[in-house]
Image 1 (tube, rainbow, N blue to C red):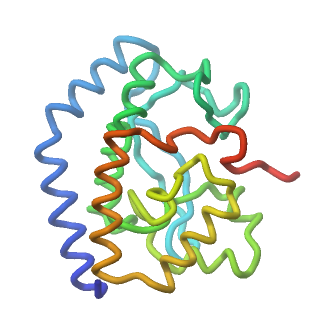
Image 2: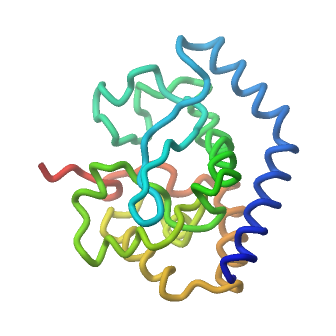
Length: 200
């Protein structure tokens, strides 16, 4: 998909889904506030296309200050920092809906590598930095091929493969596989071999 068409696609999809999901978002935000202290919207600094920083928006699924507790950035199934409401939001990926605002702002795309935090990008090899050539996405090739259950280097390789082979046909396939993944919840948590580990 060519970039001008991709941008039009991003705007149409993100705007439509946000409009249709407004009742769901409002209900989720209310449930978050009723269950635990803290704001309903969670902001985290991520690295976007060409290394540009931006704040990704999500619904808060963990207790406030979770990044400074337990496993830090790593999240696994049964993590005690995840709230009851948050577990449901993660399972259904409703927590990602505010990402659509990032898409409208042009910081993200519907399809592309998931945006990562600066400390992860600092560990990239020169080859892995090729991942930053693409605008980060809500879903992508790595997401539909194992998601967080994959070892971190393998996830990056899948994103690099997508960068070299991206096409309209591949994007349609990713969207179909994403819809199927939302039903099954496969790959939601890192498990024993998945996820990123700080080597320092």
